[in-house]
Image (cartoon, rainbow, N blue to C red; front, side, top):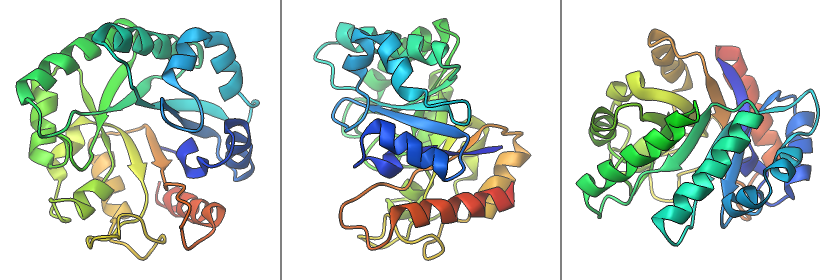
Length: 254
C-alpha cells in the first residue's frame, strides 16, 4: 500500500501551489480532485485541452498523479460521457488507473442508477481504467449493504472507501466488513459520530486505521491510502500539520 495526498487538502490554494506543498510534505503520489465547481482542475477544462491539463498536474519526478476524484456538472448525458472520456484520456496519459465519482442521491431511482453506472463502467473499462463510487452520506453508498448491492449489480464497479461517512452518517460506526472485497481506493481523515464531528483532529475521532488496513491486507489490497482532509476555512488547526500527522500515522501502519 502507498500513502497519497488529495489536492482537496489544499483546495484554497491554486493547483500548482497545492501540488508543491504536497511534494514538500514528502508525498510521492497525489489524488487529483477534478471538480467542475472546485478551485483546481475542472472536467470541462480537461476536455478542452488535455495536454494543458496533463502539464498542470505534473510538477516533477518526485510527485506523480495516482488517482482522480471527479465531480461533474454536465447538462446532458452526452456531455457527461464526453467529459468522462476526456478525463479517461488524461488518466491514461498520466498513468492513473482509478477514477472516483459519487453515486446518485438515495432519493432517486435505484434501478436508474444501476443503468447509469453500467454505462459509465463500460466507458471507463473501454479505456482500460477502473471506476469507483465513494461511500458517501446521502447517496446509495451511505450504508454498506447498499454499497455492496450496487457493486454486485454493476459488474466492474468498485468502491472508494471513505469510512468517515460510515461513522458520521446513519450507519453510526457499525461494522462495514462486507465492503472490503469491493474496495479499489481509500480516502481517510479522522471523524466522530456526533453532528459537527465529520472532521476532527487526527487522533480525536473514531476511525480505526489499523483495523481498516488489516482488513484491506486480508483482501490483498495493494493500492492507495489517500489523506483526504477537507480544506475548510474555519478549521481549528493548521492543515499542513494535520496532513503530515495522518501521513506519518498511515506510513507506520503499512
